[in-house]
Amino acid sequence: MSLLEVQGVGKSFGAIRALSDVSFSIEPGEVAGLMGDNGAGKSTMVKLISGNFPPSEGEIRVDGKACHFHKPLDARDEGIEVVYQDLALADNLTAAQNVFLGRELKKGIWPFRILDKQAMIDRSAELFGELKSETRPRDLVKKMSGGQRQAVAIARTRLSNAKLVLMDEPTAAISVRQVAEVLDLIRRMKARGVAVILISHRMPDVFAVCDRIVVLRRGTKVADKPTDQTSPEEITGLITGAIRAA
Amino acid sequence: MQPNQVQSSQEGHASIADIVGIVEQSAFQKLRTSQAFWVSVALFVLVVFMTMLEPSFGTAENATNITRNFAPIAIMGLGMTVVLITGGIDLSVGSVMGLVAIVAGVLLTAHYSWYVAFIAGLLAGIACGAFNGFFVAYIGMPSFVVTLGMLSVARSLAVVLSGNQMLYQFGPDAPIVKAIGQAKWPIHSPDGWVPNWIPQFSSHFWVMVVMALALGWVFIFTAWARHLFAIGGNETAARMTGVPVDKIKFQAYVFSSFCASIASLLLLGYSGSAINAVGTGYELRVIAGTVIGGASLMGGYGTAFGAVIGSAFLEVVRNALLMAGIDSNWQGAFVGIFIILAVLLGMGTSGRSLKSFFIIKRG
Image (cartoon, rainbow over all chains, first blue to last red; front, side, top):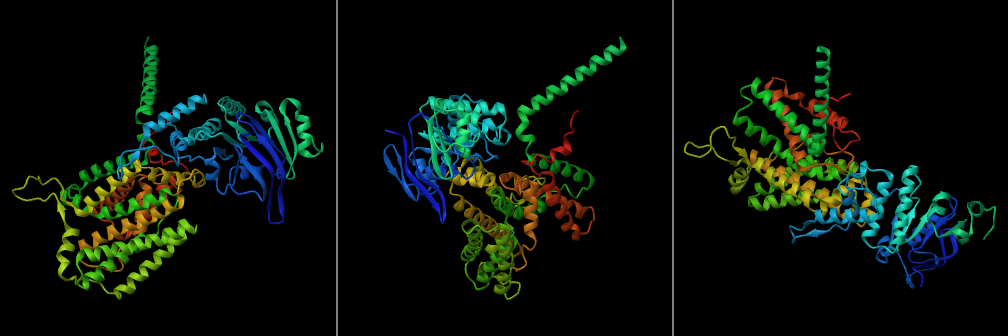
């Protein structure tokens, strides 16, 4: 049974057809690349899976169970987490504070129910350790590199034991060295049985970590191939429309 | 031999400086990047300087006066800090003071008991805060616009309710009201334990201390405060991680008005009268005090201690200027300049700023 099944999903915004009849599935621990040009429907797909809005038609199944997400929290309850492009971190807080934002650990009895800071710091350190990131729990996010920020955002998904993590352009705005760091983070998630959907424009990154590549063009799926059976040239052709479908 | 010796002593000097630099960074890093700390240093220097220069400055009486004068500003500063942390601003605090004073004053004049009057005043203030909070948090209007509107509305209501009269015939509970506003501790008495050099701190000061400690505790230990800071740092992120952003922003404005109400009731008791003009222009002093103390107008930063120390700093400067014989009408100019300076120095930073006055950059 697949972890995520997208079946005949379509989405319209008024007269605009953003997606039509897209189907694919993701297995546990699989890393899938979702590629396509601007306006191909990648962002819409991500928002459907992460529960920002429901599809106009079709069905999204998680562990074989049909889901109707209306808000991101619904998707999160099913173990689906998103790491956003702008990372959604609060710069003025520390790494540990960001990891636990909105689900702080507490101790004591009301009205003296206070934050369990040490426990949160320890658990964050553990998560960063699992990700083999050098991020320190007490450091301010403001002072971190792009790679460390990714680690914080990913640690947040690990905290909830997400089964599927969607990563929206995680390597778009960071240095070459940090890209390598982020790709390592993705491999470590895979090693822990977490499925990842990587949305990216960067061909080398997708080919470096993905088991499978799904290509969208103008709202429809034009390819769904194992990475080792395709080439960057073919994917480029599929994205631009030089190759109709594969 | 001689030049060699000079060189080696120079080397020794450089390495000591480096070591000191490193030690400082690890041990006092947090302190050094705290604007409130540097304002405290500046305040201390100013107080020592004034005490040496002007004998009447360093007296217990003057300390009593200064602490009583800035306490209401600092109390409102605590509320303002909470609002500033969320990235908002509350311009209505001065007018809310006016309305609260008049609501309580009208009831006292009508011979209601003091607690009825105080509770009604508090409720009126909280209602103003709820109005601000509703339109900012749930409707999504800019806080500047909403609270500017409330600045006008609350002041106007105060004038209307008071019939543009000063209220001072407070009925049977007048002594209790005055006792609350004029209480002091510790009291100097011939047979008491208190030496005369200890100031007789006003009730205003003690209320401020208790509220500042309470808010400081909340800031350090509660998830509510953590969320408050997260909203100021990245509101979208806070929302996406499930922080109840709207609710917390609403509460911030209510708290700000609550603080203004407390300050107003203390001043009402101190003067034994209610005038609708009370608190006029205080919003600027409050904002100046909190910003000097390290709160950021951009949101995400601020401390309870900073609100208190910033207000104290402003008041000591004002007091010093008065003692130096400078016309009190200059006060507004100084407050304005201090706001601009504090924001300029804290611009784009977490508020390490004033320290650049004290630390000379090496190399």
